[in-house]
Length: 177
Image 1: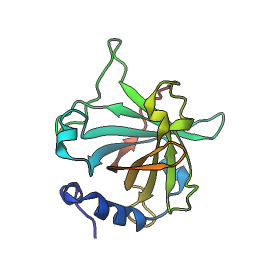
Image 2 (image 1 turned 90 degrees about the vertical axis):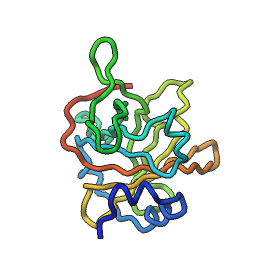
Image 3 (image 1 turned 180 degrees about the vertical axis):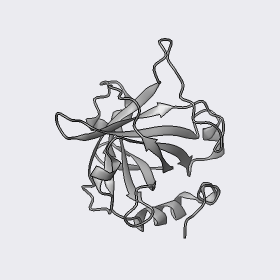
């Protein structure tokens, strides 16, 4: 049974963790050169008022190294059902942040690990301490993924921040940190 976005948005972190724990493995090659609409879950609504609710998460297979990496794209916050319109810089390029590498999950979880510490972010960029385990919500499908963000400060510092990713199509641009 597919859980709706609205139902996911109502879940508390404990329930979201149960979905993450019950998630399915992801074939990393199935993410090659794709884009997902991301929806923030689990954080208090007052945090969303000054942060964001929606974003784009990309996955790009580097032709030279064959490594899987990606980045996030800031969106104009038009609501869950709103348009997916990227924020732009003065030169018209998309506003990207939080570059990452995708690795196997060293904790032995079902999915993969998004590691911002391996993404080439600047030395003073706080995202370099973030990691996101991600899983598929359905077996043998990467159409919908669920992730959780934690801080790696030499030990895991839990956050209430989860996110739902829904595939929106192929990658249409490449960005660098």
